[in-house]
Length: 407
Image (cartoon, rainbow, N blue to C red; front, side, top):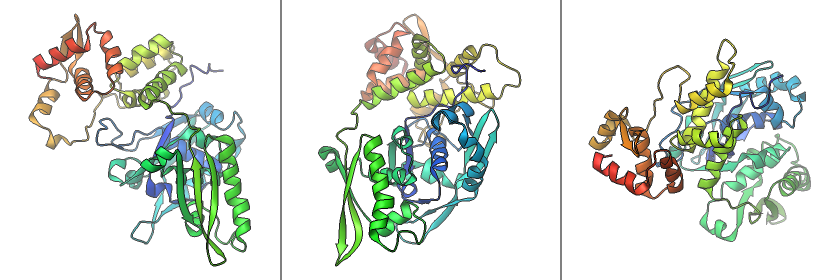
């Protein structure tokens, strides 16, 4: 039996990102189908900000080992008996999106779903979903959710309701009040919660007790959020619900430190010691780059035809040198296309393979460029400071050297 630390596992983010139209879409999933969908999202690097420099250019095949699936389904393997049936339904099921201007749009979610016994599940999203999953910077709005809270829920209604309420989490007024308010009509709830047509339509009390109350009870008991609601009537008929979700119990962690620590934790979960994990992380450009490199390294390890004796050694070298699945050097894309590069950016690209001598050591121009950009913007300074310690140089000395060499 494989040691758990030796098991190649997909790096899964704590957060998932979806465009708001996708959050509100009608998705005909059961709970296992919903979790598989979320697993696929967790492995992606969407382009969600103009400042974001490293993101997935295209959808790629993502691999989830059987051990990870089993762990995420409560340590039980019972789900494997129905996995083929579930994946078959998901592959052929369409999602329905309601554009703001009316009408509807239908999409298939996956280009490929493949399960190999004792190995794992392969997922590949449909290319037409790029605007809703990958190109979020152009989507007109997206929702970020800590997926660990979603995985604590066992009701699809609970997952979908929490997603709908978290769409409003960044509204300034709600953040200051530490609560979220949202009004949803019965028709909107039926659509987005995927309530089967014709069910609970005879009496509103049945809809409340079997859909809303079940979902809210789970959210209140299993997550740090507290939800309650009031009915909105026209005459004697209930037409909508006003939801209030208190967020004061949600941990307020510093996002930058949290994400860096998350990357270190993921590296140690692969079997690396704490010190080695920190050293490996310093070779990456940022947290997202670290996630991407580890995913590629694990994918390469999975594709080896003969067993790799020193798996940790293989993974470390692949991560630090950023080996690509196709064996080619890493290719990065900036949010700005190459045709729009300025002369200074072109000069940086020409010198990308060169090194800058600092503290008696050599630092690649590509890494130096990332560090100096962060310094000039006043961002991630603690991370930069830790990275420069490897080169025995202070931030002040490093800045002078970059200015001298035109970086």
